[in-house]
Picture 1 (spheres, rainbow, N blue to C red):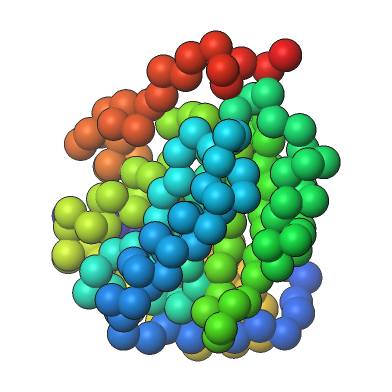
Picture 2: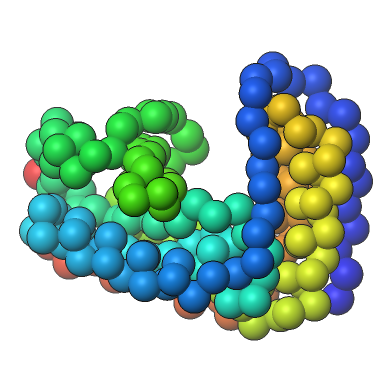
Length: 196
């Protein structure tokens, strides 16, 4: 199935950024696993689920070589303690906003590998569906690569316009995924994860 996309100039604030797509590397899965083990060692008691999302999680697909991790934490976690633990692990808090009740973005570069961690409370997040759909549908991987390459040429120095440009494609694919495997990532969280 082809997803319709329209690439237009967006009226957004510009800043210097270049999104480079490279061939998929098997080391990304190992790097994800190693990083999640490190995080479990540091903040294990509050981690509910950690998943490799984004293009580096899709074998065979061209990707921006940043490992994206969606880390779900219990509602009982202390956000100051969490931020302290992430900081001593080399992560920097980049963003604290979004549509979710908790939506933190941390980044770091370690041994030449960039990591981006999104921290949220447990939920049935769109990112899981999008990544899973791409893993199951190689034809959609190719289409997403094409969209990203076109946007990368159009918005060489504007990461916000680049992200906005791919959002309609991502939304359409996520809707297809939710139809194909509804509530696949829904959680049934116990008392330990309830807010106190």
